[in-house]
Image (cartoon, rainbow, N blue to C red; front, side):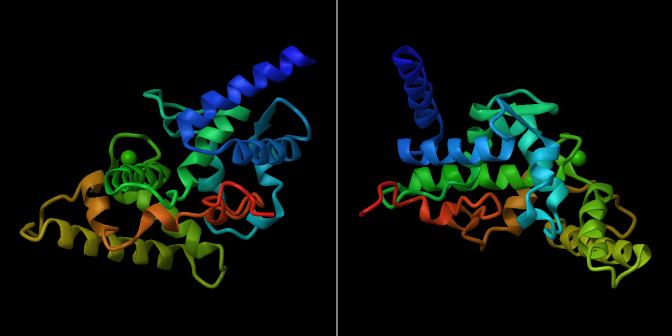
Length: 220
Ligand SMILES: [Ca+2]
């Protein structure tokens, strides 16, 4: 018992170093993880699919897939996992961690980039570094078809028009018959420049309100 306690504490320490979460936050995430997995070692897509708060999220599929995307494990591996363990779960969750109060400008910039990369990966499903029109259409169609009020063709037209606008903003001198390959990460950064991503990207559907996570210690 004592030995396993020590082991989990050292695993936690490693996770704290890697993610910037406090011990208390990691322990909270552990509770959440066990709840989601039904006290199992790993979480599957079905486990996340069963979260009621996610049921009506228009990009539920993308959010769930992001948990199994190896690119979100802060390593250079690509591909998809069938199931994720606690450490992998924490690594994904760390993308939603808001900056602590005493975060330097440089650190904020790094966090912002990481969060944007996470969002970019959600759209760039084949990991070729470009969000193509086809990939973009898929997201928009899913977003709009969820409401039921709009047909497939209309959704596609909206996606195409939005993409055209992105293309004309990013490549202003593009000739009419030029082919726009899609949104690169640099373009993506430009598009979302005005957005304060580093503190905005919250996650509430797991009952883990990361916006309050910045106050690591409870005051009571
Ligand atoms: Ca792509």
